[in-house]
Length: 304
Image (cartoon, rainbow, N blue to C red; front, side, top):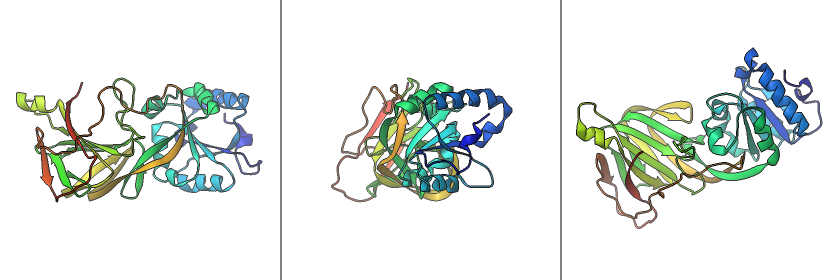
């Protein structure tokens, strides 16, 4: 059971604010939470604590704790707990800590944070990284925006539009998802979003099966996702619907505590840096207007 003395706001002004997700109310987590609490206490990591509930917004809870002096917000839960606060947290002057208890915990793996009480040692070490966050309309995101089975286009800084010519998936990556090698699939410290366009696979076509192994990748700082009809975009673990979304990068917007084995950037082949556009396989590029800017590149690469 969680330490009762940490709940409420009658204590001294601590720097840590521990936010427990509501799914941890399940009795199956009692033993693990007791071990977590004991380890936090042994490391002298104490502070205010609160639970997320259906009847009070996460934003209201965290802003209240920050106003009372907390400058490190520690989320206890899983990657979906991150999603519940990421849409507003980068606007607060705080450092983010993360204690993963259960799956999904792919972001924790990228950050080098183990599950359970071992995560407390990462928190105590306070190895802080400052990273970028993406923005879709007015919502911040940490990992990526995903659109599947779509013919939508991405407007790249007003210079051109790029889309899967036969339908496919579009990913707008900041940190990205967990790659097969355990690293992030995009670099969240480079000041760019990475657009990945992956064509659909058709089971009865050898040509399209080969196309599905290709990715077109574009770097941008601002842009738009546009479609002729409403589309569904998954932002981290949240779903939004619209015919048009503004996208952008907010450099060095979030401070977070990571482990020493963090892998915040992809490993292997570098990111695109060519200053030209091309009609890549199964990708449509529509020029918008002439531009003299630099640093926007497109690359097609084989996956796997």
